[in-house]
Length: 363
Image (cartoon, rainbow, N blue to C red; front, side, top):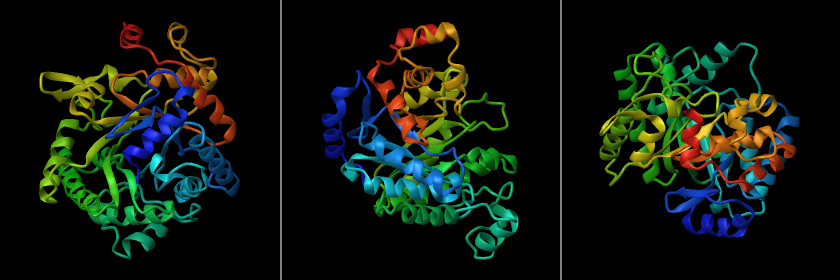
């Protein structure tokens, strides 16, 4: 389990290699503002080996955030992360390991008949009720998330997961009303509060793709204020003194900057962007798609933005732009091979944009 003392010791060991604000507060500890993402890649042994080497390389060179999900690469990413954390020459308590549950995962490879496999493995066994399954592959009911958390602990080989996300809850909006989704989130949050009290997770949150980036009238919109409110109610139902809901994840990069530009979240003084709402609410924000799934590494940032952002390569500039946004704790970057690690980690040796410079980009 990630701890205050271990993360500060990690910072003391690596901090001199990086520019200001590279390490940022997470609870009482600190984490790197660049993290390893494990979404992309084929579900093959060769990709597993490359990921394992990359994660070990990152952990041993100043990156102490690793993000995965049970469905990434058919559970292979979680299993690789577990092996890498064990192999890396660092204190386990210095690394923040985050994972997610929500999409029904295959096991190692995609079955020939996915629908039949899901029915046999999850519906027939009573793990998933068909009424809770959306698009044949997504479920956030408490019992299913409980099961997925147990599987993630086993895949990762950990006694506790530092940050557990309910994965893309907006997927449920395709077949349910927003109120029904909030109700189910509250039920699931209650179970996660109980698991936190039992020591199986330290904190939890929601990882989204569209929910917190779109206008209020969009079909994928969820209110972060309502989600936070439901988490507080869940803590009360679980008899916890305070909620363990402490983080959100969403895409953010120069071509997907909606979390900063779209003011659709209702704050205490009116509508505001998700990033500012999260900042005011004291939530940690982890951004995904920092390179727009590789597109910005090849195409680069718009010229007028690129000239403002520090970095020697397109990838470094894109990473530094993402981690310059207000309230961002860590920007996740896919690092599917050791070759990617050195370039991505080196972005942290350059300072991010200051607040005025970041605002000027949008003017």
